Image (cartoon, rainbow, N blue to C red; front, top):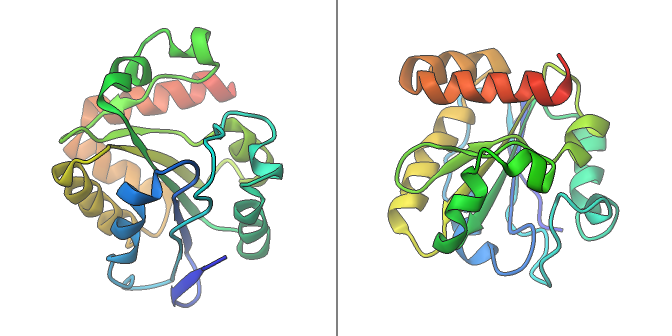
Length: 193
């Protein structure tokens, strides 16, 4: 495991990428090029696994190849947790589908800009390892898209300097109100809040 720590104290932010398959090719450099946070700690786990693709929605992911993530979460108790994934363009419609909840078991992602999608992390890690007040996000970037990488890098720059979930929600409500409202509704509906 190659965990990089920048800064110190709270809030503690954990960003991970390269969770499965060849995603690391599109995602790891984005994390490695982030600047240090203004306050608190930023932990980066740029490559979790370069092996076969196992979905984070698979119940065994976080007890198998993703166990390293759970170990870091247990040790540092992040206030903010972000997974960075990549997707093939032909899967876009499946990822944002309104039917994703009934088809796959989780709500569809929201589309931001430049092919970047945003949603919650897998319930397999969210429910078991984070308190309700933690910010837990997944960003999906389009494979091979430098525009997608650049846009998500800007989003991560904002999140790495947020002090709480509410700080990021405030930013999203101002910049992307429709996406923010959908994300909040999906979260409350899915987690029964």
